[in-house]
Image (cartoon, rainbow, N blue to C red; front, side, top):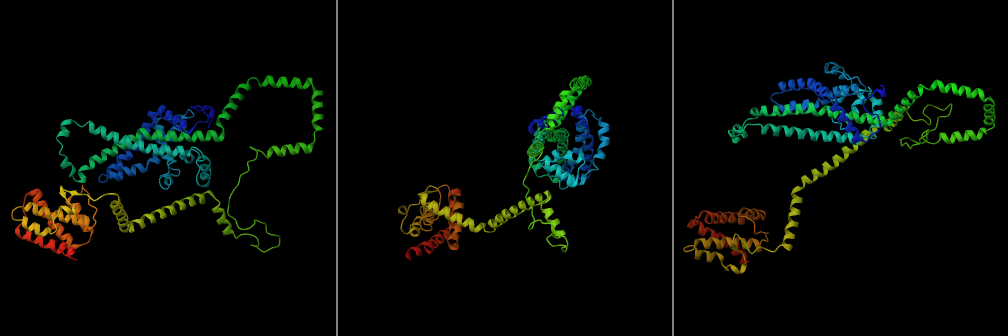
Length: 508
């Protein structure tokens, strides 16, 4: 890799500026990237569609899961094009199977859902690192630009969804108006799932075409973030400056050497005097100055490291038995693992798991006791409504005040049945609502319907009152909305049940 051959300006950039550079790189090689991606991914998509024709969702999910395998091809093309070795479409497609040999399984399993996937892919593919070496490398790279890489993935997910919805809407707009007018929407809604397979596979095809356009841009942005991070870490821009200086000074280096030689021959005495004066310098003072300089950055960077250990790490004395003052090998290995970066990630995962269990347990506990909590909240709401909201004086246009009702409602209703049956039934229903409101303390509202009143009666858990309320409400609705009078037997029954419920309570 020769930095001087790079086709872009090598300099430190901000994370978002680096991603802008990735978009420009993808635009410059857009036809090569899009055509190579299409030649590799679309045949796989077609094969999955044929094999999973009865399950379009499974086909598109499997195709989406294989994206890391396809992402290796755009990264290969961009890494070659960066240094002036842009391959052709044929060369890139032929080279793609070789790119799948390295760490393909892990990239499709536990690394598949990594939000920094585009940023860390060059570590495995271009640097060829794996195992512990890869972890150490990622620990350095992810100190910066990791957040931007995650945001790149999140924004990319939303962009894919938005483009897919746009394609489906565009397809609907291109349907001829005559065809749309002839559609029977009720028949379409009741169609079987097999008759909708074409629509599912059509949506999958739109998604595959969207990836032809978007996925090379996503890989290019991650690659530019990786290049920017290496530029900062390895000072590529300074290296290029020094190389340019060396090239500029190469033409005059011979003249400079000749001039220095003439100066040395002309002033040997001066150099001798300088050497004698340097020999007279204080050696301890020079040593102390050197030590002080070496103790400061960038020669020395002290840092605090936290680790697990037992007691003081003292070497065992000579002649002592094995194990005296020294930890067993298995315990020392365990402590080394606890101090490693791997255990740090495991600890973070366990912490997330424990918090998830705690939140899930609290949610399960609340769900288990939901009835009690609902009753408690309902009682509080009822009590507060009693304090803050006055009882309504009218419901359904009926006066509910106690002073507007006769003392013996059943006798008054019996007198009204022969001549004014509507007023008789209205009197019974008004009396029922008034008793519910004032005697049973039910919080009725002016906007309540007959059904909602019956629901509140049901909450009282009084079967006899509930049966009477249902029957009286049914006859009231038949008369109010259907103009059907209750039969004579029902009239007598309503009055007798009224006396059994309310006159007995008044006598007591």
